[in-house]
Image 1: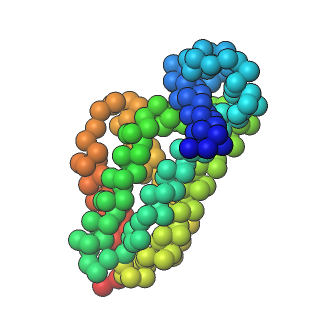
Image 2: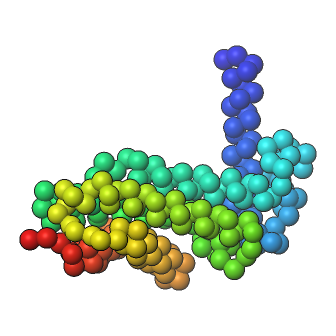
Length: 208
């Protein structure tokens, strides 16, 4: 392995170490009370090392949130058909599998999910920007799938934009309740119930 490869691996490892430490500190203390010294102390590196990768705690927080959003985008990208299918059972199955994958992302990255839920509401500037970006990207991805899949699914919708917002709201608020308040939930069962609820809402305008 070349010196460049070793240095690259070391850089990636140190950056990930800082990010993981920041997630734990933000989750434990909250963003406002966390200091860079807390993050480097958790990571076990010198304070100067932090500034090799991030300019501030705001920048590392944005990095954490961006990477989290990328995980959701990947689920959308890997989903060929979301609202489409040959019949209702196939459509329900597609929606269920998609929701199960999204819930798994939330559950596997619970500390980051909680940061977005908790810190993304009630703060200004940075958090408002991150929250709005997350919402808009999520809604845009749902809307794109609906416009592509709906004709084959035999649904007739007059306002895809509004329905996309409604569907996002069902998922986001449900995920918040079961993860942040109840703390425990069955991913399989919750995905099934959400898919059933969403499909019934969409079927209000289904063509015969």
